[in-house]
Image 1 (tube, rainbow, N blue to C red):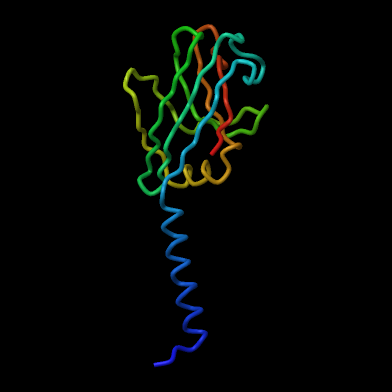
Image 2: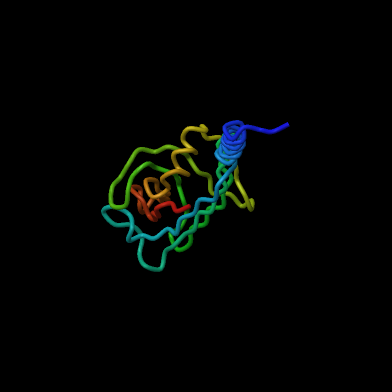
Amino acid sequence: MKLRPWVIALTGIAVAALYMGASAQSGSVLSANLYGEDVVGGGAGEEAYGDFNAYAEPAAQSLCYYLEAKGVGEVTSAHVHSGKRGKNGRELVALQMSAMDETCTGVSGETIDAMIARPADYYVDVHTDAYPRGALRGQLSG
């Protein structure tokens, strides 16, 4: 049996579409280096720093992460916000400081898809009593 070229082409397109759909469903690594000087309006001093490393899975609606902050004292809250570098934005995901190695939280698949597609449009910030508007901040990268 001889296959027509258009049948082969359609089969190739279908396989590519399935592969692309599966890729969109898989997760992605997101990270940020947090510094006081990146906080809009100023944050903690140069000796303060932090790291955020996450695995985001849109299909599972899950964000599993490590969050570390040093030199800022006791952290009162931390979040992922929408907002480009130098701009404040709305809070999207509350983060926990945990003694555990990894913390997971539920996040809508749409939000995770957007964070994966344009990570630089999102940032992580850490707040303390001394810096209620933000001690540390870092833009996400993928």
